[in-house]
Length: 398
Image (tube, rainbow, N blue to C red; front, side, top):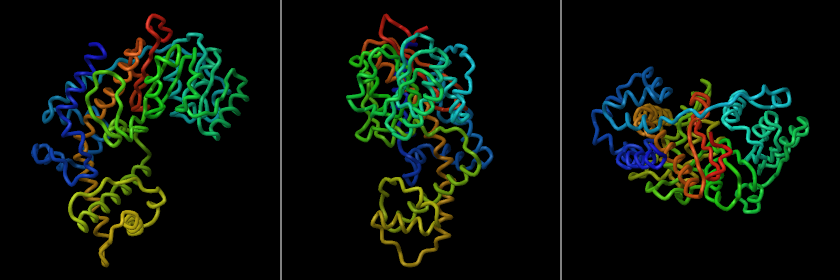
């Protein structure tokens, strides 16, 4: 199956089931599919906490559990099964790489770097942060690296680490989306490890004009920069996606520490408690829930609701049982977690569709491209890697 065939079949599958993955359970009272598939909704609500936790933490197990109700998920698993890209053995890093690289990030860098053939090309590290990836490849292959980053503090850290490492790494403090940054791509192999949204799409969109030799992109945060709706890069895309829907593709996360999970559960319950309170006070549909400052979640539930009500122009009733409304939010969160298993069953399909759109975008601009995984999803769910090079040249091809 070629890229276009896989893309079109995934697109048809997503389009035919969009009533299951578009409406977010967080906002709606009940997703409409609950009334169309009452048996599935009832089974989900009846899940005990241990089974629910297993299905949340193991997406493949959740797909198997849902498949008797949604047989198309079995085909979705097949379409999303992309090969692991071949890896090369990298020279062991020395102390010059160890400084300031967190464990999980270091493992992601090692996995990404191992999937890049040693081409001898100069490298451009796109949205470089502290330049860890560029520094790792400069150590491994002895090639010059240019690390482009917008944040002055991160640039200063990258420069300090490059100087200490005595490597051919130059840090450029600039906005990747500024047209003035495009000349930096000329003649380079461009590396983008988890560049968000428009930061990775812009590379594909102008690939036929930037004169880069090759690209290695692990996309992330597809919703960033898509406030006006998703602008497809290939010719065959027909799904209409707004930023809120695009977020679905990145909702799978690596298991957080227990205290972080407890805090997240409480935060979600508070938000859902306020939504229920607002629905009772105003009647009718509740507007989209806008993000709140993290500091608002540091006080009590009552403080949180009063701040939100002031922001939203909501007049609260004079006497409220705050403990009861907090309990309403907790019950609603328990229900949402169960019902969202259906929506989450389509998130990998959406992510692979979005990544294949990047691949087809490269191909439409005169590049040869391939896609696969560079690590296990347990290390990072954003484990897709696209390798592209100018047709006929192939420095990043097998």
